[in-house]
Length: 269
Length: 144
Image (cartoon, helix red, strand yellow):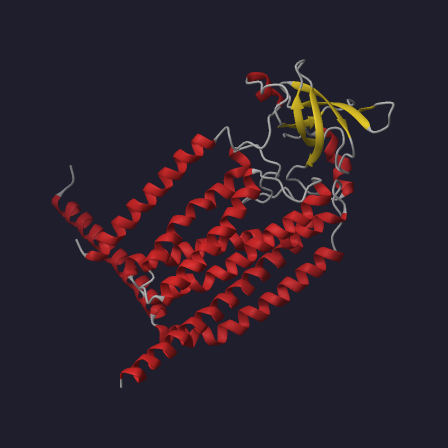
């Protein structure tokens, strides 16, 4: 049995811990709230947009150059393996873009902050662009290696579906904005579309497919180190480029909303 | 309950419902969505002869034989558990070779052999330069 003094000390320690957790939670919320303020967001986004854009372009160009000239060819596929330096980042951003749409949509549904809705709408076209880039480069790669431009296997079909889901989301969000909706319907669609992501990821595990399995895991890679390193440059380069596009589009959408609000006010007065 | 918490709960429930529905649909698709039959699948549930199907697996080592007409090849597709003899007339893809993955499009015959009308090469998820491959490729087996 604990003595009285000990029990009290334990209680105090537990209370202190909860106070700390609450303080941390409040701090995190304050940071989020600060970013969620459009004026403050714009102040931050203005210098970050060109920075992300140019850093991304430089990294991607260097990675592409290194992938074309500085790595050995594959033992089986020869030179055609080099398309992976574009194909893999495109696939990563095609799927990562939808994660962005989904998280922003969820945040919008729960906290109702308009900036989250704008973020989801801004990210979608960039994600769709990389999804179709992934499909096109994959098709070009498939012809010499597999002997086909296209097959309806699990991985290829689910990725094509993701591209269609992007198009549907873009159309839905635009229609909703044109009708003066509050963006709740596209946000629901954005969250629901997330089911495709695990399907794409595990399609090569659940079903036998023409597409090979996962090459790069969290801790290990089945791509030889001498061929892998330029991939990190194109991967980070494309990601920065993507972030630059997303910020640019968010600023555009915010400016459009401002113009519309002003026109409405002018029409009323 | 604050409205925000209510929305959180609703969003969470909706997410669980959507994921559950997708899971059910996928488990129903499990067998239908397979791109090809492995030899062991074909043995367990043989597709009727003449139906257009795909057969996938590894080309057994030393099994490729070229017929006298020069364009017909015979080889054995195996998945380690079972194997199926395949014949094909036409142009095979560059990556079609022994000890490597293949997906054959065609139909089964009544005697259990397979007649392919098209061949697709299937490679695995490993990429390496030729020097490295020479050192380690022989020692490992590829899973289809």
